[in-house]
Length: 461
Image (cartoon, rainbow, N blue to C red; front, top):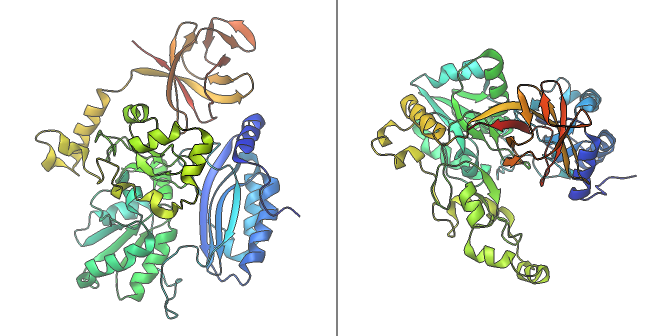
């Protein structure tokens, strides 16, 4: 009976590409009384492994917290496996805004003391006595109420790349740190203000709302489904997004683009940027924000010391990192001494006469204009449909316009980044050709791997 992974991440990535199936990335949680978490964990693994489910799932006596991906055509079979449990019947599944077939490469189901570590030891605390859930429109309306205090319940490395306007963003590394800090800061407003909270998918706010009610706050509200569900409702209903920037996610993507606003900066040069990466030195693995120029100059590393280490022979690198335990230190990017720009700053503050406009619509419009000046002029052509790893050939479906031999193209994706190249030869509908138009299937060689979510653009002069 297989209860653990038997394939490496690299082997799994090749299998995903060879299968050529679109995968869905989703998350969900549920607070419940689970008597035997270990047996529950084993049952889930046995049910999900045959369905191609990959992800990071935590179970505890208090419930389940899951972030995962699975083949789209197995979605309903997967849904049946979770709805077999009464406490997950009709559970909301938060479907990701952007999909990446490589968002998860292993199925990891772990038993934990709690699904959200809170540091609380209080037998009188009832985690089910929660605040009022709000949908996107209700949340937007309450944001405009002058008696509302909105709090970001995420960690500093999440909130600095994207957040709701007017939100209080505690400078914390963990959820458990934020609870006493917020309680102390807002102690005098337990009766006269509305406490409005949000997080990525709702699980932290669910527990936080119960905690603050337990501590005497009378008007407690939370964003139902978190930023993920909020974004879905905003798009579906044509609402204005009060969330600006990117939503940090805990998988290979490290972020989903919600709006074009860039509210953070490169931690090495200070340039407006919101792309997270991990230091290329495996002995460091620091999570930080790095722009393309710094990534090239620093070879994906956070410091010169790490650059020196990655150039050592592999055996010497292993010797250097032997015995080093990074743990949560990899998330202390805003506080690491090796980074020049350690704290999040509004990039508009670097533009003369615009500092006083920060957090306003006018400032955001200016930021958008400044950003557009550096954008590459491009035309959308199509999307990636397959990648053949052995010959390193990518396949695209042409949906608009045309491309031909000699065109410069841009391939863009969350994991792929932005890659440019000139087409020197290609096959159209499996025939050697010079031009591909709408409806055609086009293939050509690439020096890098693409994902099914990648977009193909033609670069315009």
